[in-house]
Image (tube, rainbow, N blue to C red; front, side, top):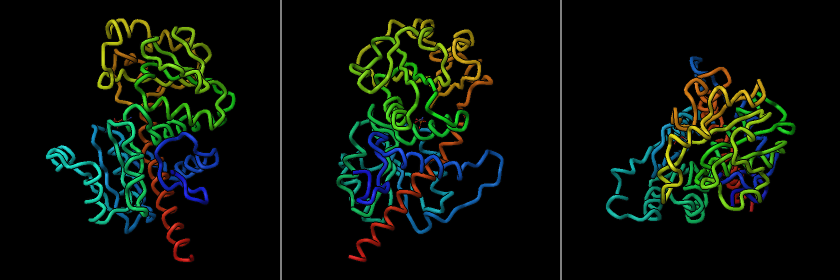
Length: 323
Ligand code: CP
């Protein structure tokens, strides 16, 4: 569903099943768009005349803003639909909202939703000329977050094959973890570990090709990359931890614990960071942290994905015209 007949990226709903060459194309394109804070921002005309609709049914700081910046740097017209004050609050269905926005003229939906199938649903039922980018759906997928994380890793450690990488924390409720595991497998990462208390470890996670650790100290040994996750209380139905204090005591990333990883290991976090819950401030702000570099890369990766999706629309239209 995500790819055109000739293998181009039409929608970006999940990293699962995306071929390695396409993931690498996203990373290579994004690298060209990386623009460091404080430098002049050069606009590219790749989305000129196109309209992008940000549909964020769930809160966001990084993803919504970086999609907006990405669209603007590609010269698109962008609208942030104000969901809280929209007709959704009067009972309008998701499909009716989509149909009405389509009628206004739109080329791309960027969708965040608490329901795990929302982006797929919209991609299935929207007009054929529209691309859908999943900006995080329930606990299912957050593909652009995974790709900005892959870009950040590659900038520090260009070859994925020897790397030992761990994702630590609330794996069970994390769409980021799932999308990262798919991408890391496709990019042939050497060893992928997940570290979490048993209550926050999804059943059958081993089937995704990861090594499971419930002991933080064991899991951190010899790592090249440590990816910390937030406790996602909003997706927990019941209390799954004795207390936040105990969680930090056993799984918090402190300076002492980080010494178990390789000396040049990088520390990542998709944000928002809960200091003193999953990570010590001295680590989050320390010399091994690349957390803000992830955010910078978020704009570049989203520019790459949006420009690839719009380019696939152009080739689809050409094919249609020729037939
Ligand atoms: N990483 C991430 O998705 O952050 P936001 O919720 O702020 O978008």
